Length: 265
Image (tube, rainbow, N blue to C red; front, top):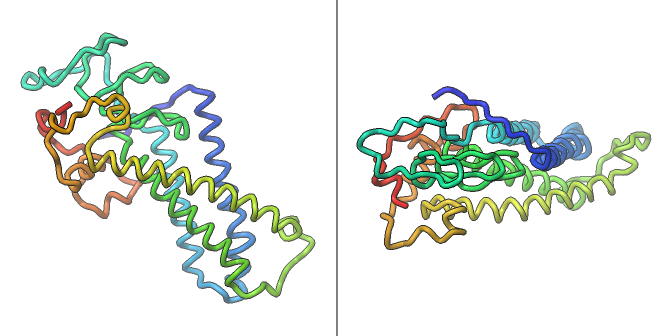
């Protein structure tokens, strides 16, 4: 399955994604400059903590970029419908094209997306069958990175030994308190928002329902078979190897699930 680049022309989405990149850059520069490197130089923390910080930041950025530019599952204009699966397809009343059940027409992007969960302005893209796993990784690594940054900000003032070498001529040192307060405010705001989003995403995968299906109340408990959580997560991430669920540098290969089980809505 080759990488299909998908780019959404939406100024509102560009602004939202730009804000996310700004917060990422702010913390990736400020936290090491004020906290990590000075305390490492004075022997308060081991170097492995700095490597871990940059590793998580890199995973977070890769997940963000890939979730933003990866085709979420856009349906072609003339899809080839397998002969034995025609009953699991339906006609979209907006674009008048055939689509698999559980697909949805995105009014912002102007096309149907397979198993669309929602349109996310923060990645300027739809979250669908082919990039949902990247969106989950983005939520996970953002939460880990935010907790990591907040933890070191707290330790810098209340746990670590005071720094002996401080160059008061540097702008970051003179205005350290204001800069760190802004970083803490952004971190707490990000943590609260991403925790709620990540929780709803996990519940949706465990119950095998998308956000759109929840809002439209089209998934009756009585009408769909229950799957084990390992199966639903494997379908989203495209592999049963759980260690690969955390790797954003790979290509997703969809699991071959029979349509009568995958398209029960």
